[in-house]
Structure formats: C-alpha cells, structure tokens
Image 1 (cartoon, rainbow, N blue to C red):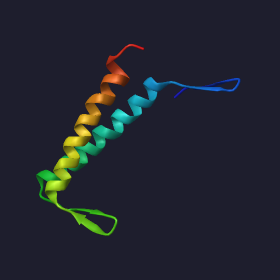
Image 2: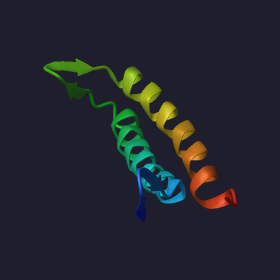
Image 3: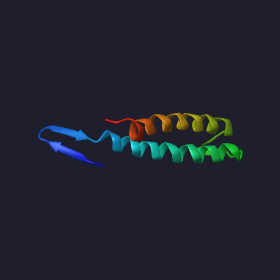
Length: 77
C-alpha cells in the first residue's frame, strides 16, 4: 500500500485499501458460510450467535465483497 505524505496532505492509494478489504470480506464470507452450512453457532463476546444470524452475516459480507472487489479491481481510477 502506498501512502505518500506531501506537505500537510496525506494521500492514500484507495485502490489498494479496497483490495485489502475485498480479501477480508471474502475470507469472512467463506468462514461464515462454513459455519452456517454446518449448523454451528459462533461465539461472540460471551454469547452464541445462532446459525441463522451467521448466515445473515455471510450475506452481508458477500455484498461487501462485491462492492470492495468492484472498487479495488474493476473500476479504473
């Protein structure tokens, strides 16, 4: 990831940020999909998330993956 400091301005290469976030969302989607498909509850802050809740998280991460993949790999800046 390229971060250039030019005087007082900080320039971030957003394409690389979106590529990183796309990878995170894909890994999270696959992990949640595995838990949902095998009917496994996921622990979260001392509570157990039901498999249905994990499935909803998987769908949300899939949507985020598609958005981040578009901005990181498809769209030309």
